[in-house]
Length: 219
Length: 335
Image 1 (tube, one colour):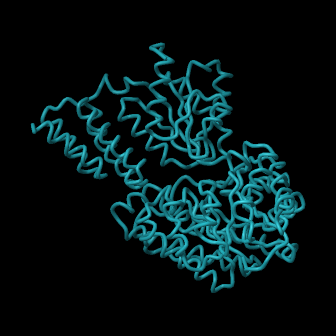
Image 2 (image 1 turned 45 degrees about the vertical axis):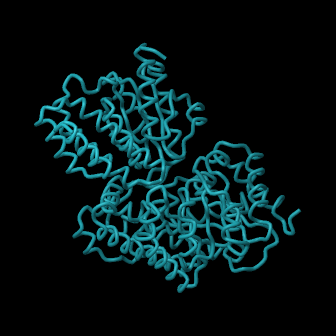
Image 3 (image 1 turned 180 degrees about the vertical axis):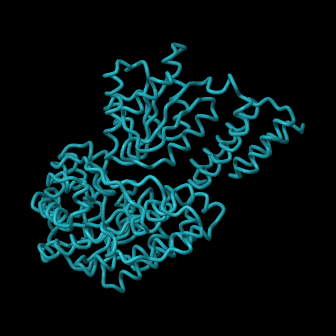
């Protein structure tokens, strides 16, 4: 095993075992050894994929997913200055939990996984009114507005954001993606969202598809 | 829940605050902060729907107010507080369980319980919402601290859970003294959506046991709502002492729960709150109520409920359909 392979394997294990500080140290070590940061990102994505698989298999629960994501975030913070000009190539996303809702665990996981997959994510936080989503998306020329809600009483805020986009003449120009435990594809269709994602992995797939659609680079 | 036969399947849909406030034309903020408004709204709801049980009480997001953490009270939604009230271990260690009567919103809910019990307590079961130890833990320390604690600092989690549980016991006793006869204890944050079965056994079960034991000693009937995909912990849930009834989410097939728990267990549930109650038609509601009765109510011991609390924007005609369906399809002996 080469030194590069060893350090990337140790980084992967740190993510799978949910060890943020080890992940941070191994990422720095990879940079010190001259490993291409994008190879490191690929290793991180693969490791997070393992975490996601373990979660689906019920070997891991939320704690392990969360600590794995924390490890990815720690690694990303070390890598970010070395990715200038190439980070965010996958697309630009405005993310937030809608008004009157403060739940953010799922949203934060989605943010971390999207960033690990090359998206530039602007996380507005929680309790975000519809006009703030639209204003920020227009200001930053975002590809996608991603909205999260864990409470049914907050779900209408998603429709409000989509209507606000349309009133601003931006429907179809900035695309929308929704997610959260009480949501469904049927609800997303009903409110006119461009995509629905059940979890972080689906969010990445949906985001890639939406960016391709917006930028006219394929179906 | 006392083991007596009933003429029909009773219904208690866990209406929470937004539906009664909407039904009575008052703000959700007024519902929480003015006991007269709260009691009147629930009376109006009772006249409108005729459910057999009504519960009220502070939600988990309001428990930080016991420690000086103020919530915002929107007119059209639940109280909201973005930040946890405890940010260090020292703060948690030094915290004392306060008297809920000394905190305005708790005092309001306790008084509303007294008013409601005085008006209709002879004909309707009045219940106390006591939102679950780990739901309160999340409100007190934040979800990030909780998840990190579960991974790296179990002592923090136990201390937070102990404090949360004692606060719930204090609140529960206050509601019971005001006239409530049952406590409803939903705890999504200790469900498999958050905790593994191992974590549930280690961290959650001791505090659920402590709460229910205290409530039984205070004379309450008790309802446990594990929430959040309960199959992995069905056996553990059954082992928690002091539980009179089990309220399962829509993610559990109530027929399977009946087979596993047996005919003597009292089950609450479990119309789908989103697909059926929020987005379905009155006919959809009636069909699902009939199906649940068929699966789990043949020998009694069933309280019709939703899989969780009623979504605040549920069409009122769907709630009426639920009450009607219990009388149409749930009269004993069943057809």
